[in-house]
Image (cartoon, rainbow, N blue to C red; front, side, top):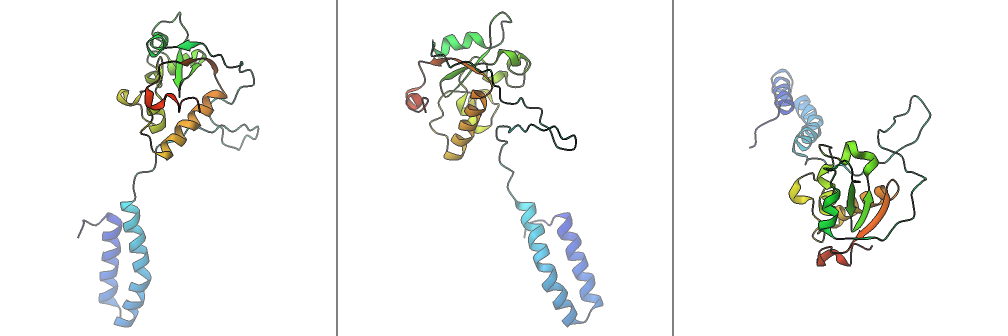
Length: 194
């Protein structure tokens, strides 16, 4: 039998105490009431880790008692998307390491200008891993590992493709599209225009 959690140990100790201090019919009744509780405690201790976070949803509110998000709200000043061609190696020049250049992030082949959030995507920023590249796979996986920040997202399961689509939608409402990656991996070349 697996080791008991602290809650299970306490429950077992209570049941032992009840058995010695109660008649058998009362003990059986107490046991019948306690078993579902033990089951729930055991199940909770074995539950899997929660799924990775999804892209943030912003909520606008003027109510001082409501929760507010630190994420930026959708913008109403987004330019018409451009279709300027970028290769993955050209995109790498816009990784935030040169302060005189804009910072670009590509998702599913669309190149977004994220320069105004240099604190997040620039050198040393929390999402700099995606700057200057198409990191679609990592976004779908909710991963900040360098080996996951790659453009080939063809092996992502449906639920992670949904996460990737949510990120793409999030970016489309907040950043200008300045071009398209022309040399996406063959496995996703036809998918990236979705």
